[in-house]
Length: 316
Image 1 (cartoon, helix red, strand yellow):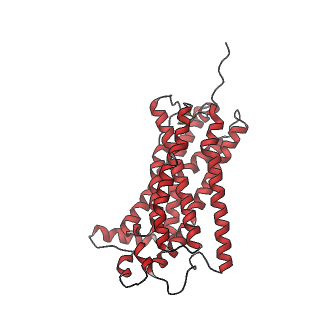
Image 2 (image 1 turned 90 degrees about the horizontal axis):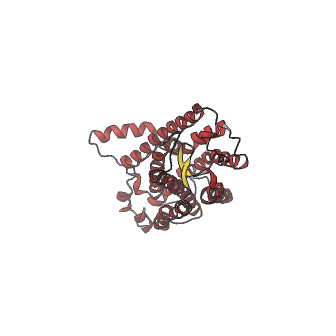
Image 3 (image 1 turned 120 degrees about the horizontal axis):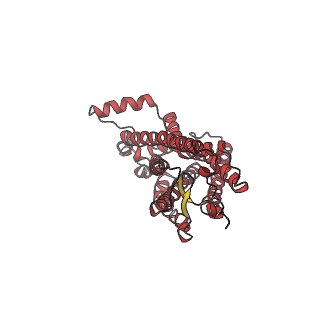
């Protein structure tokens, strides 16, 4: 009787257990850093009351989905076993990977509309569409592997098993590439628009703009980096999976380590972008005042709206 071929996940491809343990440790450390970054962003948005701005609300929901996704990166075992819990873990990883991807795509769409002249009131109304897309659409690709019973041990985690390479690419990697192409194309069009109009990222709009437009310009200047972070961090996982498919019996430990390190790190790098655009020293001072019961407000939009006759200001 012939011995069944191994599934060639990274934990049984390498000759020593230490390689697998290294990959698990790297991914869990990265997840921990990402978790801290997500908590920082959410805390900052709450303390400064930035959730009044549509752009900051998009960051909030991107960060919330990244935080939930990070939790599943803590789960890891050198010998995961097929079970209903393993199937559930695979489903949730696929679902929240998709949610994070789509929120980055929606951020890009928001930037495109803002740069091309959409008013704050129009952009505010887009939120419902974004929520339906980001929380609803991932149910489909996350559920497809259930029909093939394809969720199971996939290395140190549970995901689509290695015997279903085509399904891995169908439900995640090919759609991810298409979304990344959308993001890249949108950025090219945005830069062409800015170059044609002679404006910088935070220099579009008309003179004498109202409060809502000023906040929108600030959001656009900040939001442009979040999809870029996602694109860069996704490249390592994509390259590793292509190598796996091309040469399944010859895994490259370095690629697996880069894959394990980069995949959970979006929360950390998003927080770095957030701190870059929001003075960290001011955040600490605000946090101290918050705990001493001093009222903190950064976006005093609603108060300024009463002084403006522009109806767009009522919507942001």
